[in-house]
Image (cartoon, rainbow, N blue to C red; front, side, top):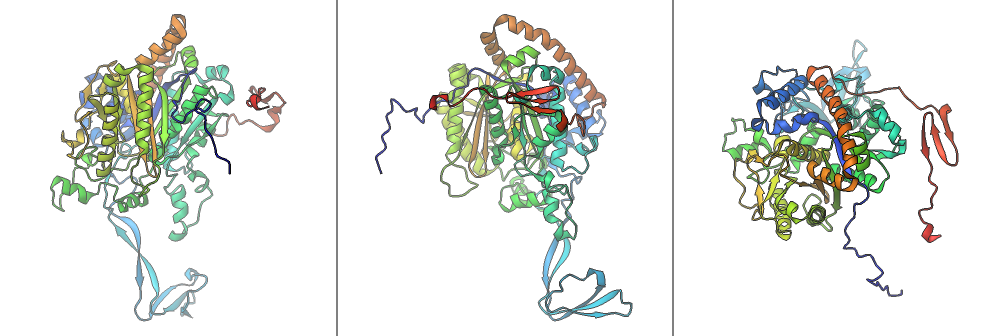
Length: 632
């Protein structure tokens, strides 16, 4: 075999910097639902910092929560108690009476009487069946050592969860037809982001070709409740039949499929990129790549995860990952008869005992910079880049590794290159993965601290939204982005209040400001944020998100004053539309966008030529260029 010679003068080194030029991915809308409430209108964010807001903002958010829960807006304590991390309220399942089957083995021969139609086929070995007098029932004699599964109920060892607001049932808001919970949350969240955009979709249809719209959405764990994979896997063991919907609706990418089919009617690129707890950032990277490369002009990106099922909770508990009731009592010095403070179950970077599982659906719409200005869309910020790296060789599939050092360093470098050292060193903050486990507090704090030292950051502000919402797995970084956009709108970075001001002794924080209280920065006080996600299996991702005021500055430098004037004029119409949508929400006159069986493109209106595909009143142009002309 010949030796391979690499000439550095000809080779593009692996130590390259990804360049994001030409088109800036601008965040123009947000929507969704989490344990904090509705994302649009910044209400979910406001719930995190409710005590720091003025009365008018508080009143609006309490009204929003009232519409979700059915509780009175005036009963503010009840609304607070019905949101964020708390004890499971029993609406999903009774955590104190989980159905279980205990394996028992008989000693000696046993005899039972049962209806003839209930006899198993074929009969188990050693069974003897004789008729009874009524002929409807039979007498069964079983041999010694017969295995039996008898029903019982168990108490889950974990009762803390980031459950959607008590009383909110997304499946009741539209004809859900036995949709899994994660898909019902998708319909609500995608409708929320679509309607809160304030830009008429008919206008976008005129400006953008069908293949210039992308949708990237999914879940990490698929749909695991009774209407999805969970019910399908359990059916035979429960003596039930598998339904025709459980398998197809259980796919992990089904949130994107639902958005395409029932919300947007999109014909563009679609799918989901799964990476455990980093999944949202994986999808966000797809969105950024599509827009920066020009493949798409509009991208709807997000995730919906509904993992609050007894089986999933038991699985994470067996791993030792969740904050159990017993462990929380030990932290708080309580007796076995006392109930722990479930509100403080998740304690990132403090003395803690595990993470808290949560459900959430978060969606965002991104546009390229030119389209955002042309339509007058809301400028909530922009995404400069998302970096993904694996951990390399590992001792344990769930343990952290080297990859997150790379993603955070790459993100910090890109942030510095775009906005300069001043913005990175003094006007940036981090949305930490911050799960609330002992391992995370040590390893992630070391990564953030080392990154801060390397880039000359002396007091890097660190927030951890899981302390409020819990860990929504695939959606968790979407929760971080929701909190980040809110921090820029209202000038308050949420602190980690659950640790009571005490950072754990083994946390690395020489160059970090781990926020134990809210940080008032002012509306334009922070120029950028770094979002960090660490997933099982070595799935690491970090994103650079630029604040709205800096995004507008960048747009003005590129497009000039006249184009910004066009944006300002069109933005007035957008704001009016947004106000109307918000008023409908608060008045209770809002319903999700769910279009079933309408606008279907039938084969008889489709025409294919060698230059385009005509779809009724729409068309998709076919490529004419040879992308590999240099090779031909």
